[in-house]
Image (tube, rainbow, N blue to C red; front, side, top):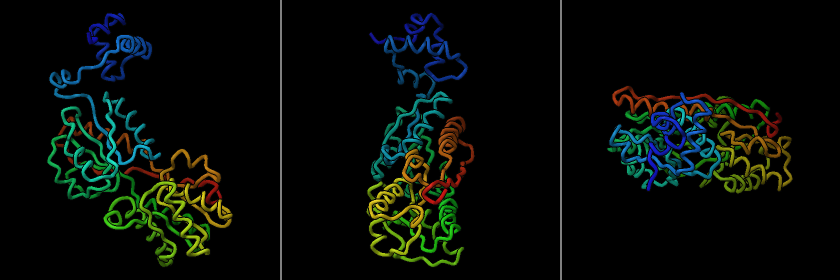
Length: 336
């Protein structure tokens, strides 16, 4: 028979209320008591009855998190912070992957699992702000990333235009004359999302320093993986050997670019300085270590979970549009 809350309490020698507090993630439980109850839970293989909890409290205690790619380091690191922030408020996190496909984003945004979850944190790629604003689902929704001007939806993001300009300005301040960019995209992706805002920051910084946009120094990519950065770097070197710096729109692109430069015998940062964006863990251990923009990932996660929690507590409260901080991290790839 399936273990009950009462069975766990008897095994642990505590009250049913104490077991409930542990299961629901309440913080005011001593570490010793939490370990004692958790041991009983593990021994009995106890699983909460989410349907019963939902009927009793009107909530499941579960929120969903949907990212385009879970195997990309940035999203993996952000997932960890979301889980930590959610646990602190007593929520369990259901993680989903959309692959950046519009149909999958629509499914999760419309609350396809609304009977299981209380709310959703979504990082959309394919859906634009108009489509997101028209989502009829009753499940509370918080957006991450670059889909701006949603109006009716809570939104947490970094000021990517400013951050990209900071990265580009760092290269220009080093005295680099031919600053390339890897990360441009075509079609809809060129008009919204991370490519559009980071491109805007790059071009703003060039203009502020009296530099023109040179098409030979910009490369489009179809994805933001290492292989895309490596291939784009090959194309840049073939087009213009004068380039002496490159801003990559994320760290994975930059790591791929570093590999190509190494294979071509180009010294970093002596010949070409390289900077990325996201400060994933691999950036610190690359050879040379990668200069980058560090968005406050913990703050993004904490603000997103808090915004969702606040919405669940008060559906009528004003929409939150939050910008979190970032910092320039200078490492060996730009001479740090």
